[in-house]
Length: 402
Image (cartoon, rainbow, N blue to C red):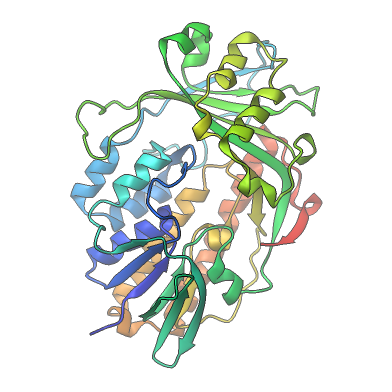
């Protein structure tokens, strides 16, 4: 019996790869260090644009793609640009749809999207499995977990995010960038009490708060999220309407190191968002004062280098998504690029005749394509960040070991 593809990391890219392999009857196992799929908040809303949509159509069965569509939120128009005191600002060139939005795009709640993608994978997903290391043999790869268990496979795919344990062993000297920016993201339930405090024009579209004359003020993007198929879809259960928001500020404005930002709890994250906006207009402050504190989190905005240096490919190990090309979330490109990676890798394995056809050339061609696509995606993300969120140029950012 052919050994399975071993996927480490049940984020969006890893799950999409699993679905694509399942669709092509290629054996696989998916491992996730969290003890269950709902162990922690899974982030905020995402925009799935052309590359992501094309990948999902390729990776998913028609039935599952229909479920994906019905779990999506309304895709709104663009809202207002305002100062923290509520004063309106003109919309400059560049404030508009993200790359790929000219074609059909979808707005998703990340947690709900992930639950939909997990449909049908119950027998293939193993939670509570924290990878420690892998060992390559002539005819297989063996992965070892913190619980003392091991698994053998034909190929190991590291889809385990920006702090990828697979990448640390595969590419130990891999460097990225700390942009110097930090984000606090969260959700505010759209209760009658909240809406009563919110200006009518803030309830529609994707809006941006900034003060061009005061760099110490954070910038906030917020958007109302509503689910048109909420009465029709029962599994996964769709969220009640909410305001999604993401607050972006310089690291100097937060008393938290880069390393600690990954471990800051929801309550502290929520408290910091309120502190940073306590002088804002009452209507804007309501977004933070009435937030669901369990959904708040802080992250450092990190990125791979736009020009990712090539490496010697392995026939037994590769990477996808944030594990190899994390990028600023300011271009709506990160999730779409991970989905694109997943569909591309599955296609190449299928064209090679399955797991027995995987060799260094197959993986090398996949990784070369990954680097080429990621370069464009990272550059577009950087352009969006510089226009709307005050991101520094690449050459002014600190190089770090990811």
